[in-house]
Length: 253
Ligand code: 4GX
Image (cartoon, rainbow, N blue to C red; front, side):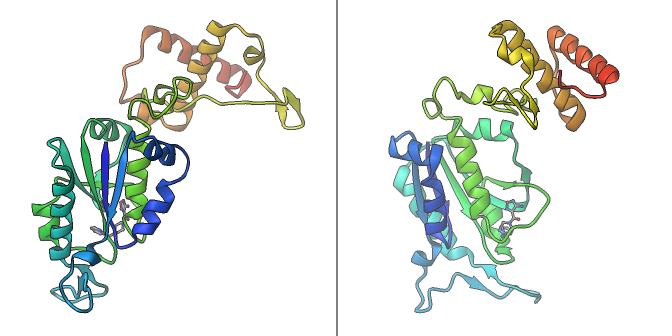
């Protein structure tokens, strides 16, 4: 996988991606990351990347010419077939694990991180394949959104996560929230670790974790349950969870 991020703040993207899982994946050559600054693709003395909006109003709009040239350069650099140009903006499609899963089969993702009030619409309409959004809130630039895409997609590339930490174990992989996790000490002022996790009965632990995942999803994100088809076993575990909540007023034992 090759990521090409287009940003007026290349160091912000490069630095943040250098940590942890993404940093290791880049180091090991499992993903390539390049950041392109549209300012390097301007032709005027002042390296102008923005201009006043037609029709008036506050703020500035990113000019399309430097962006167009920067995307052409990123395309030439990789000449891949399975390539997508994605603009990050609040007007976009909501980013989900499923959307990222599909994107992870691409060879090259060109991510446009805009600043200011936005980008000349002609660039978005004619050059970008898709527009993606983090959610219904506004941040100051597309860099953090692009970094989230780079991070979440990198986790899905085979070989990036070890077998142990495989993306299959992540919350949202199967459309459910994650189960609770515990580590030492076994007993503390904050409470005790659920007994089943201490017993070494792997089948019982697996069932408990699935029941917790189902239960938490039912309690916190019932909208997610409506999107998936539960197996008969999962339905039984969720019923058990609901009965326990009724009896104990909580779903934790
Ligand atoms: N999910 N922003 C982008 C500038 C902009 C506006 C329109 C292109 C078109 C955001 C989000 C987000 C703020 C980043 C506006 N660029 N990005 N920026 N929510 O709020 O992705």
